[in-house]
Structures are given as structure tokens and as C-alpha cells.
Image 1 (spheres, helix red, strand yellow):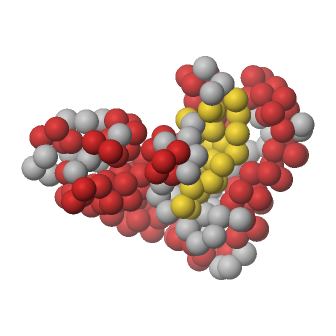
Image 2: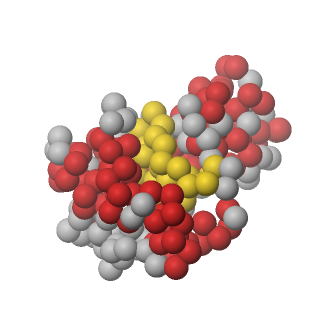
Length: 208
Ligand SMILES: [Fe+2]
């Protein structure tokens, strides 16, 4: 079964004014689509890899032949990261989390505000393209970042960090440049207005 581009769970303009329609159209319809297409291109003809789930593929890059490992890392990671990202945002969302996520963030980072500052800092200090993440690692919440389309599930040896993502923000310029130009900090601040904490809560419950 070839990998497929998932539908956006809302309209392209649903996250306005925080994330603009044109960015969503290009980001989902062209960038994410290209990751899916190029992942399929890379693994076509390799029956073992064609039968693997996306999680299993990016979680075991050592099991991918040298000749296509880079393509699977970049495009499999890109497909995984964006598939998560669309569901981490929602219209009429944002604000502060409640329940178990709120308690865990407070326990790990002191307060929700402190968590936000550390998460934004992870996004700001990722030089070039990549992602900032909130992950569960060894039962603990941590903030990490990865370069390019790497993902903590790829493991420390590949991605420089590990854990299961609960929240992630895309800091590639393609995620914000049309509306925010070089102002990544403004984009990261705006992101809080669209965070789908219900989805984060589901991922947190599943990771426990
Ligand atoms: Fe992206």
C-alpha cells in the first residue's frame, strides 16, 4: 500500500488569521504532497519496506538500505511530521491546556508560561529548518528540537534526541514566510492560538 497524503482536517482558511490560507494550501498540497510522493518513489520495489508502517519505517532507519536511507529519512520524516502537525492545530482552539496535560506541563516546566517560553526558544534556536517538539521520553516531558525533517522517533543516534512527540511546530520558512516573512518569533507566538490541546491530550494518554 502506497503512502497517501491525508486530507486536512479543516478548510485551508480555517486557521486564519494566525496561519493564512495560501500558506496552508502550499504547505499541505505541495510540500507535504512532495514528501509523500518522494517517500513512495524511494521505497517502490522494496517489498520489505513497502509493507512497513510509517512509524516502523522512520523508527528503524538502520534497516533501510544505504542507497535510499537519506530519502526515507527526509521524506518519511516529512510525511510523519506534517501528518501529525495538521492535527495539532484546529480552528477556535489554542489557549491553555487543562487536565492531565496541564498538570504534567506544570510539573515539568514550572508553569504553562514557562513551558511556552522554553518551547518558543527551542523553535527560535533551531538554526535553518526543523521542528521544535514536546516529547515524552522515559516517562518524562521534555522539549527538544530536530533539524530538517528528523523526528525524535528516529532515535538519538539519528535525530540527536528521542521520545514520542505530543506537540510539534514546523519552523521551516515554508510554514510561515508568506505571512510572517523573517519573523519566526511572531509565527511561534501565533501558533498558541491554534494549538489543538485535545489532540495533545489524546497523544499524552496514548503515550503513557
Ligand atoms: Fe512543513
